[in-house]
Length: 408
Ligand SMILES: Cc1cc2nc3c(=O)[nH]c(=O)nc-3n(C[C@H](O)[C@H](O)[C@H](O)COP(=O)(O)O)c2cc1C
Ligand SMILES: C[S@@+](CC[C@H](N)C(=O)[O-])C[C@H]1O[C@@H](n2cnc3c(N)ncnc32)[C@H](O)[C@@H]1O
Image (cartoon, rainbow, N blue to C red; front, top):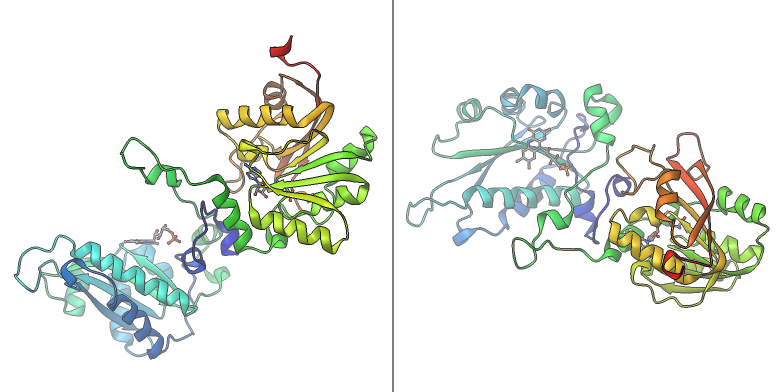
């Protein structure tokens, strides 16, 4: 489930992807002394400037020291108390702002305490525990209650325990628990060599990560059989054979279904794992499919096709330049009068999760004006069963015309 709540832009370790700050803890389930020690030991091995190890922790465990735990709860901001009171362990992280070796200011102390604390959190994740760090607390109150020397800096309180039942959470928190986990794109937070040059992750990396981390059946676009819109369009157009490209084949289900219908199918995807999955599915279903790892924005495909099926690829390219590259490539790859069946997210679909590009009929008509004819565009759904609550989609039948504006 974690995987479906976030979109990684490059593959990362499962433990990093799966850590998140839950507010739902199981108040009945104790963290063992051994587990607690392991988490704190992970913090102990964090790197620090000058090897000063400026972090200190005060652990308050409700099962072993209810009074201390109660004092930490009382020091939390009221909103944090609402949920953190179900966490069996609360860990106060403290930074010593002076170097022990010469008494001078350690301006990295707080940075290092943060590093140590994330080590603690990731170790907890590895043990099957959940964590949630908090900055919302009263430092003066906590210092007094826990006897922490005044010179030290209180940095955070980390709630630690087993994940609990979200349904028991205060209603105001429940939506946040299930919401998509979002992050600024890598291009916003990373610069390449110079502040003015943003870092661009390879286009394939995010998709590759998605296919490596999830079973294809769990992906939101997985559709075991031929998409109903595609099936109906093929029937309406009387298309039963010819060279077909399943562009961005993903799980391979559409490619295999097209092959079974009689098309001579090429399947391509930017993700190596997706292409392998398609290859295996084709072998299991005993159909021939030519499978290629190929980026449609830098495509090496050559054969002109009678039919191209794009179920969920074009809407991944919100950038004008990428859209133009896509259009040029599709024009090149389609035979004259060849058909493109395009299914993308509809403009009326407002959910945060999902592709960045959303279109209505007018958008598609405008974008596909040169060298294409929009035969039909209709509203549909993008769900496994085309269920009523599935994302709104736009399904388009587009014909490659013989002339482009450039050739007139
Ligand atoms: C230093 C720090 C202070 C935070 N303070 C609070 C807090 O007071 N209350 C809260 O609910 N979450 C708090 N958080 C959690 C963040 O809101 C959370 O990490 C962020 O939204 C990203 O979500 P994720 O951890 O699930 O990836 C804090 C996190 C950090 C690192
Ligand atoms: C929403 S999924 C749909 C997969 C498949 N068409 C289906 O209906 O199950 C989008 C697919 O497009 C692929 N993709 C994304 N960018 C691509 C690109 N530049 N070139 C080729 N494939 C791409 C992804 O790897 C992913 O498999």
